[in-house]
Length: 158
Image (cartoon, rainbow, N blue to C red):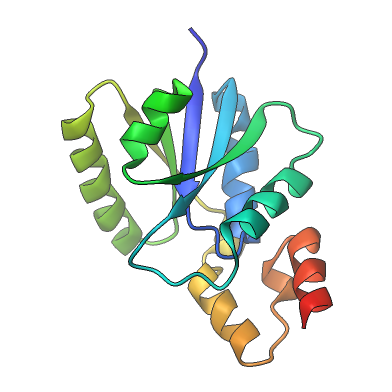
């Protein structure tokens, strides 16, 4: 049985921290699906299509990585994708507390799906999509936090 993993998130925008987690998870799984979640409670800065396009551009040469867009429960998307694993990145202890609560709920919803946590490289600890969006909204240059494909795409639209 293939080890298929879903890495869910809003990725609004995809940051170097996200890319770090995905690349370091590659040896652990046969396939990683980077899944752009549509959250009715959040107003994204970038469309789901744009976020998925960035993922596809950044990982175009990596056949173990694919992307998807979903709405609703992550465990339901995992079932659709035949994935038994969820990958989450952790920057701080407070991230772990929040992510563990979600992992516990997911385990109650479907005990066959296991959540893995990877801590980010220390140089990416301060990289958060929320901060990046704030920099962009206020006319700053967020390129140091973003993959080249994302940064150049954003500059082209400004």
